[in-house]
Length: 318
Length: 162
Image (cartoon, rainbow over all chains, first blue to last red; front, side, top):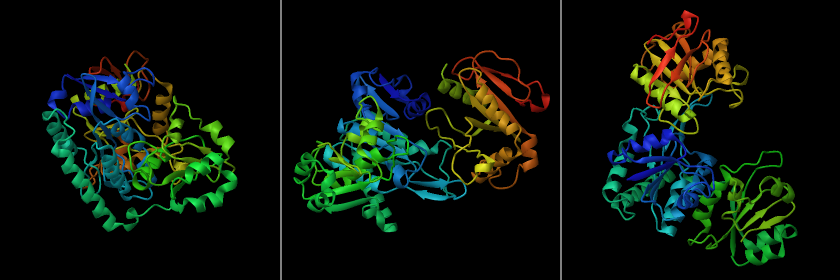
């Protein structure tokens, strides 16, 4: 019998409805950190995904679902939890609208930030585990479909996987991978900036970076950074007045890490350094507001970068 | 019962009674229905401050019902609904949102604004007992399978037609 772990009964019921074999599955709500099965604890250690499917306590699939289009910077919001499941070799599906109508004063069709598809491709390659995006379709007016037919494709994917015992090598993943790659190329053709780094990210020769910021860097940081010739800097516009927050920045760091830095499964396997720069924040204030406390999401700031750079100092990570 | 269960059960009850689920914002998660936002009239252009996202908005014939779900009777939910009852601006915002998202009047004007406000109703869903309210109905939820009893408000003008 399957067990569906979820944050929320509404999402668990939705997932249950995707396949007849799930009808007698047990739904378990994910509890707060430290109160779940060890495997669930591992999966939620960065953040909680919407759905974790288990059989005999073995995780088979993680599904994340949202009706919001992940545009611009928002694309990072759910990234940490998706990366985590792939790190643990659990195939992962992200179901969201690739484009849909945004309402309000500035109404219009919003399109996803296609860099997520590039990140998925790299994450899959590095961890040798499927991670794919599935489109929640919209109608001709850009309104997301919500008459039940929106679930047709994802339900079909789940059916195919279920029949094959959620085999990680099932061909459906390869098909979705190709679809995602084509989608990325198509979107880059339509909007060229997606083939480049965004304005908040720049590449710099490590030696140049060290010279520029040497009065803020510790000896340990300088020694470690110089091991890589190039560095990627993600400039984050938070300031000391803003409340402590992680989303979407801690997710974006994964997108930039996988797109521009990582070349192996271990977080230290990087071809380029990843530096998070906070030009408006002092080191001391940062530590007070965002400690590396594993019981809170603020620890996600410390997951993948090599260094955090502040206006008066740094934190060396790896 | 928790808030999720009340939400799910309310949705089942309204569907069973032939209401159409138009929109809503479930607790802690995403459903497949649109989320609508009723903005504070003094804050229309400035983001979400003061805005309100109903848990459920349902329709039967010309009547639109705004529903709030909580495990027990909740004074804040009563206030949220009262804010619509006593604010013409909020009613206008709600109507605008429903039309803009093509949840009503998709192809032609089936419901004009005057019809809309005269048929607008309010409901709180929770389990347990409470005194009847003047203008707000309540749905007394028995389980998470949509078994519930609708308690009509004191003022018959605000009754929900099943």
